[in-house]
Length: 235
Image 1 (cartoon, rainbow, N blue to C red):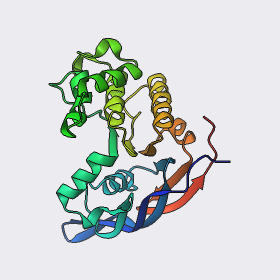
Image 2 (cartoon, rainbow, N blue to C red):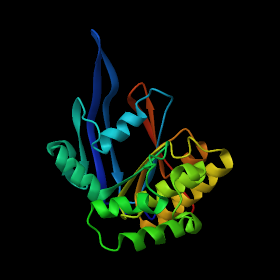
Image 3 (cartoon, helix red, strand yellow):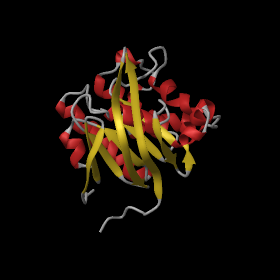
Image 4 (cartoon, helix red, strand yellow):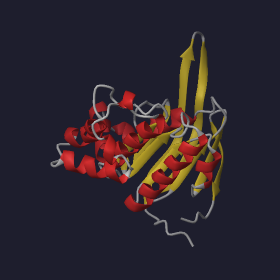
């Protein structure tokens, strides 16, 4: 039996995104609807151009839809203004990107401290140091991103994403820039922290190893949700 609770944390209804290209309208997403329960790990898969990253951006409130609605923990994302969406993200959401998105002028420690400082959290330095130690970077606290390997940079990014203890974690191709062995280590770390934190995880990926670790797979094709595959996952 699954240990996932029934509480709904995301509800997506009729989500659509079109953009104008000259005289034509390009449909990126069309009538996408689904729900996510708290604690699920969900992979969003599909060929390049199927709308995966756009869907993730809309769920996070980083882009605006042409139609439809997104509810996060009962809050209507697009009933909020831009500041309201940013505040909701700050309270609830962590991000991991394919390109790491670390600030080059900051050390690993400073990168992980940043979201805590923006939230006005006390003891930011000690909390960030503990999280970097948890991801195996005890000896890299004062290194800058250019001094770190790709795997180390993604570990810093994972530490930064989890340090605020978000309810939701959005990851866009988190192993896309890593070799297979390093990618497997990052996957183990990501799912280990996810279990410890009880976070709800949505990730865009082409990585079958990542997909196999998820409870559910959402498949997109030409901007439409094709199916939703449920699976039991062993820790």
